[in-house]
Length: 113
Length: 113
Image (tube, each protein chain N blue to C red):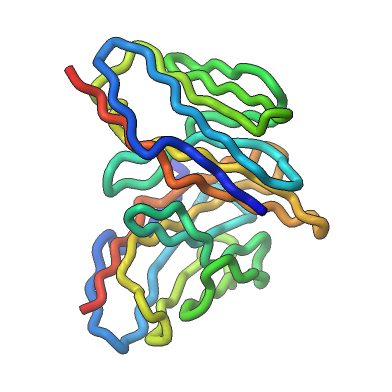
């Protein structure tokens, strides 16, 4: 089957570092995306991993291990505006070469002063 | 500026009425998508289109219809057959290359009374 798991909620302190994990089970894996979504707004793209390893982009980094079906999003120097939901999405390709995104339920991060 | 626009942001309709949600993009993206987001649930795919004049059902297409007559436009009609239409609807578009992150519109919150 296909499944994506992320923690439902996390809390962190302004200025700290937080790691949001995502585990997945799927056939035809073809990349993993992280999105940020503020309440009532649209998701915005943060990062993309298709090969194992770490991708760094400013305060945000994302890691992927395909053999373990595992990814994490690392947020450094947390700011209040980072309070949002973080969505993990896995892209899979089926036998007909059709691509499909499978979405996790999201992790709601609260950053406290 | 390039982007993807959904309108309206808030929409109220009486039960039993069909309603059409607009989605327009000027990013020159081939692929467009409609998602539904409900509290406590991940993004669920309603319909998607990879090219003009072609579209495919997603996971929850029942009670919805779409058209793709122009590359820029992908309207979604919520019909009276949709049993629980009140939700947050998100339109997205993407390229169809290897790294095809989705860009989302601002969303339309539909309330059926």
